[in-house]
Amino acid sequence: MKIIDGKKISNEVLDEIKVLVGHRVKNNLKIPHLAAVLVGDEGPSQTYVNSKIKACKRVGFQSSLFKFDKSISENKLINEIQKININDNIDGFIVQLPLPVKINQEKILNKVNPDKDVDGFHPLNYGKMALGIETFLPATPAGIIELIQRSNIDLKSKKCLVIGRSQIVGRPISILLSQNKIFGNATVTVAHSKSDNLKELCLDSDVIISAIGIPEFIKGEMIKTGSTIIDVGISRVNDNSSVKGYKIIGDVDFKSVSDKVGYITPVPGGVGPMTIAMLLKNTLKACSLKD
Ligand code: NAD
View 1 (cartoon, helix red, strand yellow):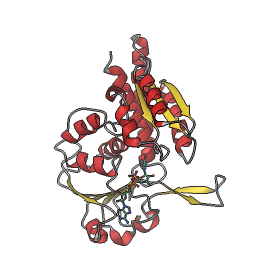
View 2 (cartoon, helix red, strand yellow):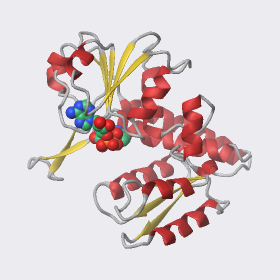
View 3 (cartoon, helix red, strand yellow):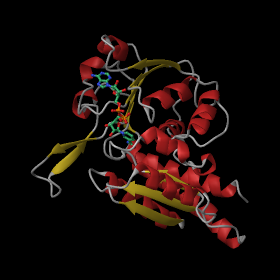
View 4 (cartoon, protein in one colour):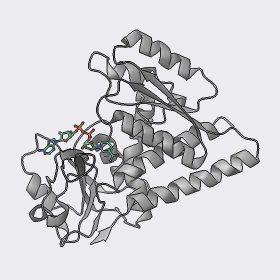
């Protein structure tokens, strides 16, 4: 079993970004600026935003947090987004999801200026991604691709099973890995909650990318010997022995797959850190496109 160390690889990406920011400073070019829009402070959203801001500091980016009360109206939030859209100092921004249920998430994401849409969720950028046109790739799928490439895993003609069909992970990674690109050319199958032959699909796959959110769902008996597993899942489960009172668990039962799997991403320390690194990479790109 070989561990794909997302923490190490993400640090390499962040170091590369830091060097490029240094070159920009030397050449009197604009320092990239990432902003985050956070509505309410429920769940782990505040933690995710804090990690993004911390990563900005690490690479020398500017960052801003626009925090609004969960009672904010949809119209007021759209107004605030429009202000960020025309703020020349901000190169890219994200709207931290999920938004409160009374706010139409799709409507809000459609208001983000596509040139600043470093999450790649605007329909224009999402459409470009699906067509294979250069754009901001959604951060988590981009992070998965980076992990696979930097681990020298060639997906060409490999049977790749993506479990989950969400707009932010399952759907885009399934599209990207089937494309005729250096990182793609896999034979991709997408499974989801209505798939009823998951074990057979898993056993027939060279690569499994799991983005479900059910702790330890994938067991050793479900996988082929030597397969690669990318575990995107993040579930918080109670853990009285930890100071936080919880621990983070992936979709894969790590122990039971460990003597069969070829390559695997751990949770935590796999896909998670890559997501932030790729968001920063997109922000650098948004800033550089304006040079
Ligand atoms: P989602 O809830 O939008 O989608 C879950 C998907 O799993 C659905 O498409 C559903 O069809 C599928 N599913 C549910 N039960 C299933 C079953 N029994 N068999 C097969 N498929 C099933 O979730 P999401 O936003 O894509 O996130 C998935 C997981 O990945 C979550 O744990 C989330 O926290 C995590 N995540 C991690 C990162 C990261 O950076 N590591 C980023 C985004 C999401």
